[in-house]
Image (cartoon, rainbow, N blue to C red; front, side):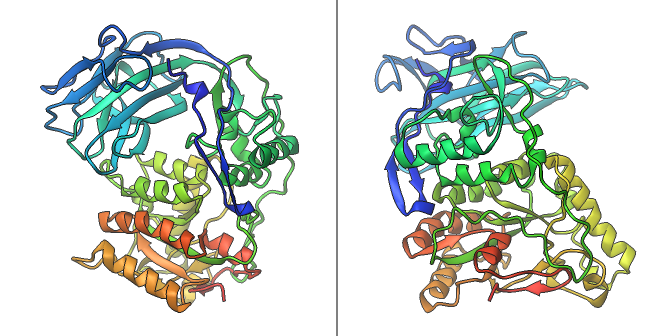
Length: 495
C-alpha cells in the first residue's frame, strides 16, 4: 500500500550545482493510520458525489490489483467521496495522500478536497492537496500537515479536477494522525540548525545521509531540490517562520526547535537602502537573470491561475515576485502561504488598487501600504516590509517621500491585461527579448489572474532554463547582480 511518508522523490534537479541527480526513496517513519483505502476488495467506503460512475476496476492500479475508475462526469467536482468521522477533529493536523491518473492526452489540474460544515452550518469547501497530473502517469497528491478548519463538522474527503471533465483513476488514499517535527528539521534531531543545512546539501550531492523527506521538503512538492536548500537557509533569515511551519511526521513528539538568532527587520525610511535578505546561493554563477512579477492576486472564487503559475515556476526551481491586492486577500490566504513556502517573493500592490493613488495625500498613501503589510505579516507570521508595485505604475513626490520601500516597475510590459491578449503573444515577446539580449536583468510586468498568462508561464519556464536564464525574484535579481535598491525609487531593471 502507498504510505505518504514513503513518497519517492523522483527527480532531483540541483540547478545551483549545474547537475542532475537520480532520485531515491527517502525513508520516513510510519504514523497512526486513520484511512487506508487500497480498493483491493471493493470501493472502501467511497461513492459518487452526484450521478457520475465510481467503480472498482482490476487493471492499471497504482499498487496492488485494484483502483477506482471515475467516469461520466458532468461537473469538475464529480468524483469519489467518503465521510470522515470523529477521528478527524477541527483544529488538529493530519497527513493526506492519494494517487491519481488520467488519460485525456493533456495535463490536468487535480485536487484532493474537503467538504465540511462551518460554525454556522454553511457547507464549505477547501483544497487539501493539488497538483498537475500528466496524461497516462500516476501522480501522488499529498499534504503532510493539513490543519482541519476550526469549528468544522460533517466532513467529507473527495477527489476532483480543477476544470476538466475527463475520466480519472484513484488509488491508495491515506490519512494519518502523526506526531510533530518542525519543518526544517531535515535530520530529525529535534532542532533546526546549520547541521540540517549541511545534511541536506550532502544528500543532494551524494544521495546519502540522514535526511527525511517530510521535513526537508521545504516546498512540499514531493522531491528534494536546491530550492529546498534555499528555503531551509531562509529560516536563518526569517526565524519567525520556524514557529509556523511545523510538519507532521511520525515517531516522537519533539520540543520546539530553537530560534536562530537574527537581527529584527530594521525601521526603514524613504531614501534608505532596501534591507535585501534574499538568498541567491541557489543561482549558479554567470547566469542571465530575469524577474517575472505578477500583479492583482490572489485569484478569486477558486480560480487557479496563481497556483498554476507557482507550480510552473516550482517545477523548474524558479522564483518570482507576486504583488498582492489587499482587498482580494481575505479567504485566499492559502495562495500567499504557498508562494512564501515555494521561495517566491510576497509583495504589496496596495489595499484597493486606487486609480488615483498618485494623487492621494501622505496619510492615505501610507494607509494603502500599511493595511496590506500588516495583513501579509499576520498571514506569514513575520515582521517585515514588502516591495510595492504602484497601481497603474503611477508615482508621485508624495509616494516617493512617504513609503519606506522600493518600487519595482516595468522593464518589459507584457500587456497581458489587454482584451484578446494571448499566451503566444506573451511567449513571443519574452523569447524575442531573451534572444536579442534585452531580457537580462529586467523586471517583467504580468498579472496572475489570466489563463493566458498562466499558460504562457507554463511554456516559458522550461524554455528560459534551456536558454540559459534563471527566473528569480526582484530582490534575488538585484542581490545576485550586486545591485542595491533604495526606498522611494522605481526600478525597471537591475542594470
